[in-house]
Image 1 (cartoon, rainbow, N blue to C red):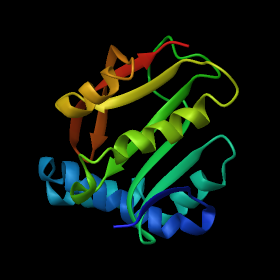
Image 2: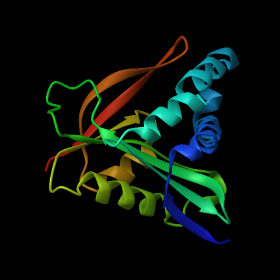
Image 3: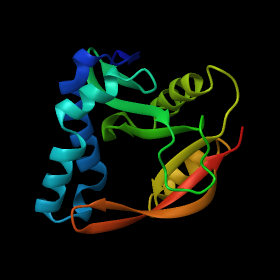
Length: 171
């Protein structure tokens, strides 16, 4: 394995789209009826949507690659979580996924560190993360990095509504 992390570009939109669908399905696909999962993936991870995100200067995405093949990703940008204390200028880790064969080797932490460095590039600011209420491993991961639960919201995947925790780390 020759693993590396690099910042994604607009030209990576199709790769990112495919990887997002694959990692979400691998992690959470068993929770949803197939038609709900399919509709969610087609909308949330459409190539055009990924290209739009990658073209925005206020957003950034990193790819974890194994000999040039994307096997993980992290995305960050302005906070869009539904919490009354979110302030202009707050940042959010929007996604952090690593395919199962590459987990437990520190690569999730390295992707997080890239996103964190980018989010804090202009100095300290409050950071936010939304995480599924039953994803205890992710909750422990973020707790080790100073995040605390401050709220909840519902995340729709088709007709299913997942309970998500809102985590925050003050500046």
